[in-house]
Image (cartoon, rainbow, N blue to C red):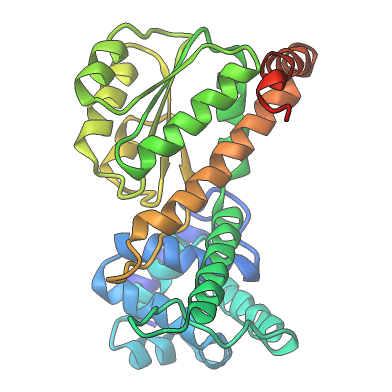
Length: 311
């Protein structure tokens, strides 16, 4: 074992650095790789792709063996394990063994999300449905419930909530604000970057600002979140890149699954699925905390619109 790796292991005795506490369950490993992969170095990506692609084979390897297999170093293997949420390589191997056992007992359907121009429509439906299910499962597995709970608390007591998003994320921002409005909370969605900033500078402590950006680097969303952050508002980022620039100005980060783009299916389609799941989790959490006020507000909104749905 190299000196580098010994130092890393020595630093792990006090617990995982930046792992957020309990290591992820085996079922969450593939989701973590998909989510964190784009933010890793290329050598770390090789390690992550190897363990996700062949958990059984990698579980049988020592740290040296995995380093040789991936053409990296022992230190890189250990750092990758830690970034994925495990205190050390031994813990990652245990998770790989668990994941391999799960796959043997119930394999996922033999289907990919690569849609060809000449695919029959039945195949398109099957591939899209499978990918949507995988996106939801990955987002749920990787969602930090401590961060989620803190965001719910902030929304519950907020004087006002501003939500920023452009493009497909703008649609998700509108969905969240409409839900909050229906339970009697003050919320506004902003897709125009100028209006977003001019509203953000009016926020203060006790307000909440939420940025929705799959890439984590959308300037039109980061700029108003930064303005809100600097004025003392509680800030939340919903993003597929947990290490993206937007997180610099977020008190709470809620990570969605990282979608794989193809020519016929832009990442925005499946990324929106993960974002909507997070939005629903936020809304239900807030509704639970404010049930005495939320229930009458929902009833009133249903009653006000009931005549529009009568035949």
